[in-house]
View 1 (cartoon, rainbow, N blue to C red):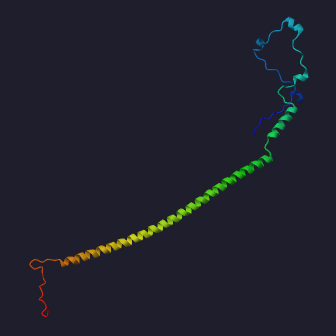
View 2 (cartoon, one colour; view 1 turned 45 degrees about the vertical axis):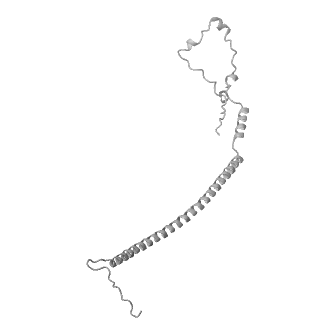
View 3 (cartoon, rainbow, N blue to C red; view 1 turned 90 degrees about the vertical axis):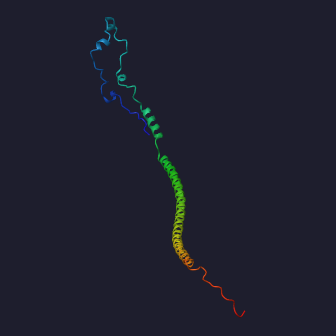
Length: 179
């Protein structure tokens, strides 16, 4: 908290110095001042004479009571050790709850990750078994195709027709003589 502090400056007359000097004179001084006529010189100024004590007082200087009040006000607004401890306790509580919530979320994520890893390993095992079975079935299909072609070729050998050779090669057998 940056609060403005009132700075105490003692009047110049208390330091043993003379009152502040008069403003510098310039070419316009004669124009701005009215000449004093003979009637005014006799009577003098209409202003009361200035006492030496009043010439050294400055209206913007705070008194000791003002300074004391300002110090008490600033002291009341200062952060105390109890305030810092309370702030630290509040911050610790909120951070602890946030870390606890994060830990819970991480544990839930860890369970999900383990489940997904288990499913991935099971899927990989099944895919490997399916690839092995597919390769084995492909080999069996190829072997069966070769066997079918061989049987087809063997059956065709029996169906060969040669021109000029009668197709019926079997003669009728005579009936059994004893029957």
